[in-house]
Length: 239
Image (cartoon, rainbow, N blue to C red):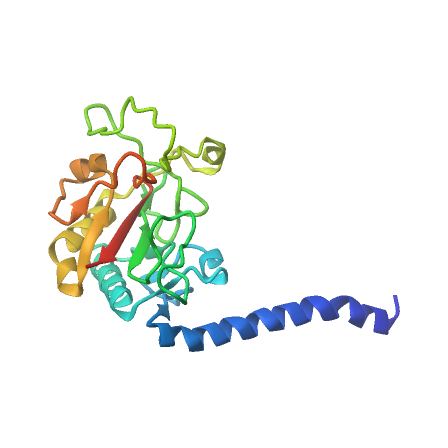
């Protein structure tokens, strides 16, 4: 292959990367005009908050209002104080522009005021795994109810529902991993007790997890049996 041919071969990918980088930079500059800013994508040494995957940032699904970001930063800082080394991982937030534009497959996440965070995990030997998840994407690594725990949707066979079990995805989930009750409990207690001071209005999580961790508050809600499951992540939103 000649030198010119080699240059032509790499020219298109290089231009594509440059174009995408330029658009991403422009998006970060324009998003504040719509009242949104990016959540942290990468955490440095000792950082308590970052994105669960670069994919969320690459797809511009990590934008939120400054108030929602301040809440998330305070939550992450609290969990890291309570459980040294704990890292809070953000999942979907919102797109950078236009209220009302849906962030599929979510029914909400269209105004910068809703954020999902991943659970905190222990591995099969009971060791904390900060910054890691049972599921590659953070979603769909469901923490199933134990015997005797609340199961409000047991026995239902709704034909029109978003409460998917994602069976095809389950082989990718580390089934031997379990939620870290210390870190997750610290996060939920902060959301219950201090979150409203930061504008928190609602938290969605499955009842059996609240029961197991002995946490509850009036703004903790069950999303219903036709909406997506929330035993794989925490959803919270402003008032």
